[in-house]
Length: 318
Image 1 (cartoon, rainbow, N blue to C red):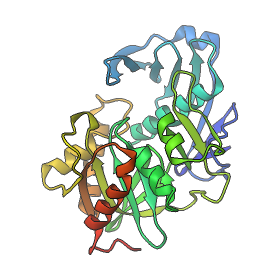
Image 2 (image 1 turned 45 degrees about the vertical axis):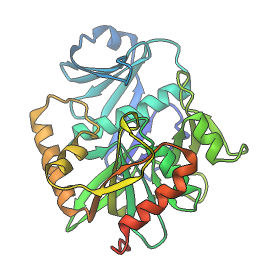
Image 3 (image 1 turned 180 degrees about the vertical axis):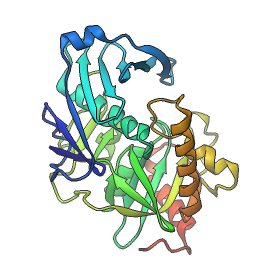
Image 4 (image 1 turned 180 degrees about the horizontal axis):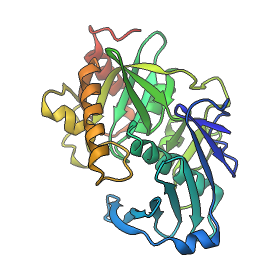
């Protein structure tokens, strides 16, 4: 049994990306589906996700007892209506790392989103005696590279690409996904030594994964959130200036909500709950900024300096 976020995950395949669980928290069971189950699936497809090039990368459909999330040409996941049972049906002979990536980094966050948990596309780091700093943005906008650059400066890596937020009292808590980094090859080669143990994320991507939970970087603790930086779209950057600005008003809600992990994007009840949760988080997070900067490795130190200047003289220590 494994731990991911604050839940336990029971799976019929090994999940080396995850630490072991003591069985506490909500339990989600994952197992291979049978041929008969697969043949009986007749989803009513209602939503698709596309990458930046217009390619369909995910499709969601309803079935009598839940949902099917399809990764075209790769695998179908059948999710029970109670979101505690998952069956997987590979659509081809699928390498283990690809199945695990789609399960852990795509499906499980959306299953929790369907349970009205508030999960964002976000990486987060923490320096000793300070609250967490989260970087929010779309895939390819530099969240992982920025988090990795802080990790190389001895910050604690809280989570990469996916982070669960929970309002509590007047604060916001960060609940880590699992301790590891997923980086494009140029980022891993620039920021890390050649002897670091990077592994393939999937067979269709050049991204590499560095698993960290086996060392001294375990993410066993829930961490208070000190600030959110919403990254800009690098494709729309103009010039080489680094800009950090406070986000105010309605832009706050839009910036946060559009980065959620959701399964059924048409479920009005879930969307209403997520909207209310976003408002609670925005009301409680001490600092919220937009961050625009050139995606150049030799400018990362200047980005760190701009972030530090934005955070000071405001103290985000615990």
